[in-house]
Image (cartoon, rainbow, N blue to C red; front, side, top):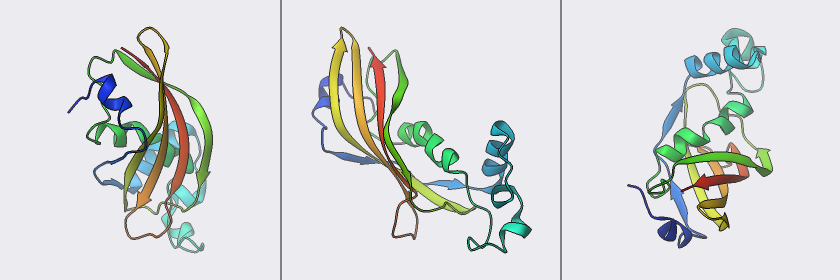
Length: 150
């Protein structure tokens, strides 16, 4: 359910959580084909089984690129009347735990700041964490900046 920009601004410090999503081998292979990153730890289950990972793992950038999908599956993040949102950049990104093929992940979005930069243009800074089901440490933590145009 969309929220107003005022309602979103009141969420500073609040964490919203997405639904679970499965990162399967087909998703990993599609990402490898799109990016040209076909390193065996991502696309060769037999060879990857011989590594400390015990099987294929998702690309770190695939995990990061799940942000829009996970955000779309998170109540309270969609802003009513937003014409578009664009990536502005990241202050930091850390890949902490590999996502194994077949793992389920979900996103946690904590609003850190929301400021109007120009009329109808807002800059949003969010802490984005990807949790892996059954793992103690997250897959990644990022501080991400987006521009929202109302």
